[in-house]
Image (cartoon, rainbow over all chains, first blue to last red):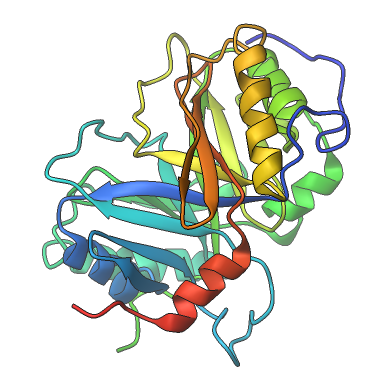
Length: 165
Length: 143
């Protein structure tokens, strides 16, 4: 691994000055099944905005929801006939749960329903890289991580600490 | 129907990188996103909210990705996107970008894509959060 470089000021001195990292994208060979996975298993909000694609965001941003008015990012899931570039565990989408016990419960229930949602491997939870988490993979090689982080180790808290390595 | 899991945040996505410092230079100096390195093997980046993209170090060439698996950065205006496209073409070799696509426009959203030094794809556009707010508000399109 190569090492440090002079810190720049992104958004001030950088070439691009983005407002937001706003979207990630993934593919599915079965939109209906992937949507069921997102809604019924992972508890995310979905909307089909195009005939061959739907959008995903965390629940609560709708009117009257607990996150109403707060910024969010979206995942876009697009229908394909076949997955051209199968994904691996290092390419995953992560969701944050509220406790270690929630991760254990999520593991138990997702493992129990794996066949119904045509999931591949559902790995057991373990501590790794500041979190307690497990991974599972869907039928289209999209990997998902369910994780819990102690409050001082959530991503926003780590931002305040700056570089540590 | 109550979901099996009730997360409070769609928290992160991931990319791979081979040379942490070189990749960070591209993120910070060209893309203009914020980066920290909390672990020797990972750096975290963000812009505009609580979510994060985790960049994980790998030995050797990062996995080839297609543009169907990408992240999108929103700029403030269509003219900013056009200027960003010109800058990407001019600085492609300086930041070891592998590809810079042509500009395209759809329903007032101007965009182009970059495949970076680690094979990851970035879409640069002038899409807004209101665009997505409206789509969620509208609900599913008719079957």
